[in-house]
Length: 246
Length: 322
Image 1 (cartoon, chains in turn red, purple):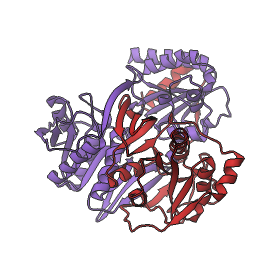
Image 2 (cartoon, helix red, strand yellow):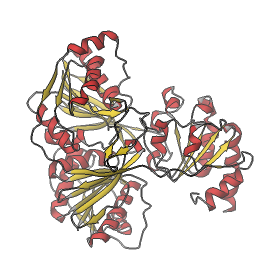
Image 3 (spheres, helix red, strand yellow):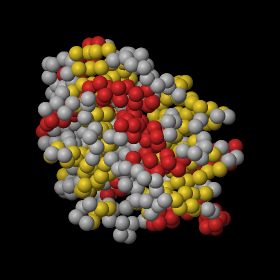
Image 4 (cartoon, chains in turn cyan, red):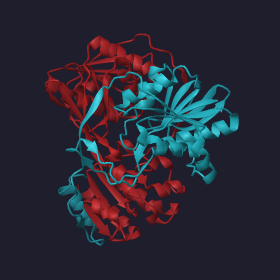
């Protein structure tokens, strides 16, 4: 099985978010970057499990500049065989999807896997766009993937619960909780990652459809109003008359 | 500008998020002197489709031949409707179908998409700017869409839809669409008769402070009294006290109900990311230093085992008096 896993860079989940340059840029100062958790815990680890069982090769692809190399090495340390970095700033989702589709189009990948969203932009766009550009089916927010030859059986989120669906490879899958368990890279993996191939390719010509104009932070909450735990009638009264939510 | 709204149906029923999307489409149409057309599929009744007019649709296009949600066939349907109506703005709900169809349509039409919008677009000449949540609810970003056709996927619960007595005309719109390459084998319905969490306006949530899965009765009783959905923190879902689909937070689902009541949850930054779009937050915790109190509107420093039943009684008393 020849699998491509899309890996994105994201700030660590505990990061306090702030912006610079007149609120047009995320302030990366002192920020610890990680592999986007959905890409790592679910897409990459499930891809590795499939490879370990059925053989084949797991390649990662990342659209980003050289500052992405540390998180790409992390993906290699977890067990990917080789990595590709498209040397460009990931301008928007469509730009990123075009780069991935352009790289993947003649490589014969049977599965293209990625997380259900990134934790920084929360767009859920790239997988579906790659599928469209490569004319492949797309299964979104999948929590289980089993393969039988070239037939994939998946559980995916659906209105009111889950659906079990089936389709023929190749396909694009966005992965969510349940797909696999996080793996912590061991020392051998970290050492091996240093010598695994990380190929840098130049970007294809591509367009951007959207652009961030500015960022802002939610307004600070006022002080919490403390209610006597003996007096829940007061809380109900406040929720009704002051907050007007019940 | 002509606004097209993609309306998702599920087993013949129109989803709440789809009504919100139609209403949102109407708000945009009012700003741009346009009209709203809805496009849908499946088995929703004629009456239900006409009622989309209550929310602002003038016309509803329906393809009854499409029975199962599939991203490739639904993208064809959306594209056909965009072309037939000359739509310049396309609205989806940012739900399961919206997340797979809207980006596909965006790539096909080269039409910029803002997924998870929370506000009506700012339109000024050629500038078309839409706000969405980023950094898992920790910040907002304004996105400019630079293409002629613009697509917006609206985050559920961002708008309360207002209705009128208008009805929509319903037209059959059955062109051929791509055959589904994905086949449906089975459906697993979760939560039974409960309110789906992403759509819920009131949510009661609990964490490790509840000490064990057998103690959730007091959470469910409060939720029952309020007509609320139940949710939980990540540790509780990870140890299997509660099902994963109840997990709200950065790696679970992000919700934005009108009221979020959290009992026995300390309020780690990852949990807050999933709930800080809530309009009002009530925190119940024995520890007055719990970080969640900083994000709360109302706080109760007390034992959930005593406070929750007391709150349930107070809610019941209020409901009977109301």
